[in-house]
Image (cartoon, rainbow, N blue to C red; front, side, top):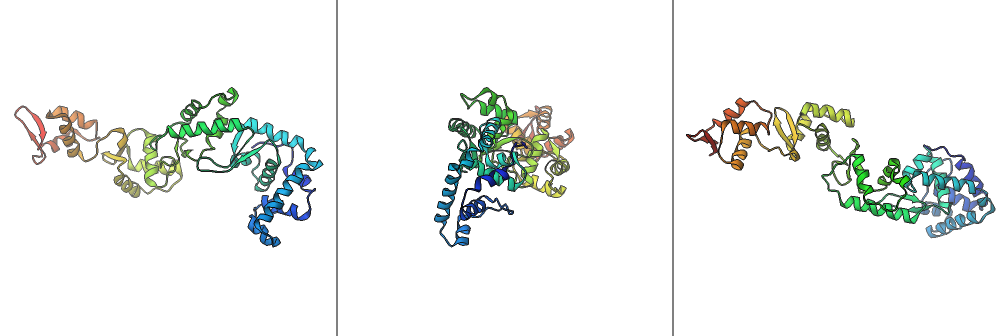
Length: 343
């Protein structure tokens, strides 16, 4: 959190002093400047005074313009200069939520700062849309470059992509041109720019991808299990999956429930007694006899040693389990040359 050299509440109090009572009350109500930081809607304020929403909007606009024309506004130049310098330090463009949180933890103080941003000539607010959150910036040119880079980054990602923070930063930087090296070399600034996007996000494990992906917006046990196994990087027992879900995500994960969810989801493959891997790693689905059948269909007749070697790459089982399955005449037959094929 940044420490401001001024008290936002004292500054807004001085600025609002030039307004008539009703105009001052409208601004206070709209921005939540009173004891209750709740912001009132145009309609609610209109009902309070018995006037239309449009009339409230007119009074609000009049109040803003009156403050900016007043002599007291010029006396607060140092306040707006400090805010502008802070903007440049933070990256020139930042989401409203992150900016206000950076400046104060107190909701009431955040509301006063929001009014100061509205009053400052250097600051421009961009409203939330399909691609981006509410955000503020001090440079149209910089904002345009950041917006375009984020859109290009989004187009180059798929729902299956999960990348590290360093990789997402590197990928983002390939899409930006003519931006200060001070910004490019500041990962905190790049993170703030990435946080502007509604289409790209970070999961609880710090991995980045599309917000439309369950890998980023994990909604249930299966999604959490996927992230756990992917993080582990190799087959893992369902009991350990349950423990890891509780440890990494703080979610209660019953062992039996976790196992059931793993069984139902095609993203997971049972590769041994209780051991699960990700299907995307290339493991074959099915029990041992199914794996043997798929291997023979793919490679043609093989001897016992060749089959054992290939099955052990797909399953964590004993060699004897494979041999027992091969002896099942309903599924496999053996030639005089010692080669096996599917029946």
